Amino acid sequence: MNALKTITLWLMRAGLVLYAVMRYYKNVMEFQTESVMFWVEAIYVASAILMFIGGFMQKSWVTVAFAVVMVFITGYLAVSTVRFPIDYNFAVFVIVGSVVLFFAISGNEK
Image 1 (cartoon, rainbow, N blue to C red):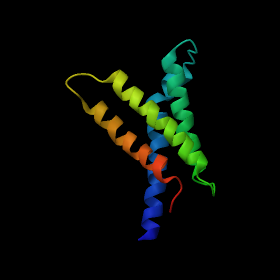
Image 2: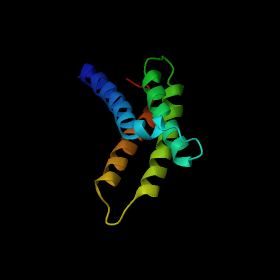
Image 3: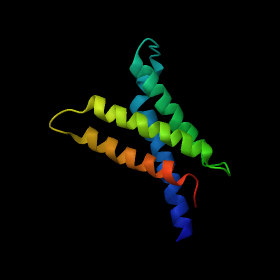
Image 4: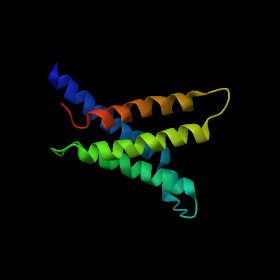
């Protein structure tokens, strides 16, 4: 059972990186540095990658720090892009925010 938990944690980390890259790669690669959203999305993608890398470290401060950054950015993106009636994009932000909050609370706990 413990092995399954470890696999699940790594799948969540990899899924966050995959989500961030697939969703924001095009916008980040346009490199419009005068745009606030460019910086928000670039920090989001970098945080996802660094949170994944933090999983290889013994101390969990990297995972926790960048998960906290991702929690705030996910909240900001969810609020700034919400449409009424609420659509599936908001639901995705809630799911991603929940996963990131999990890592912010538990770090690299096995």
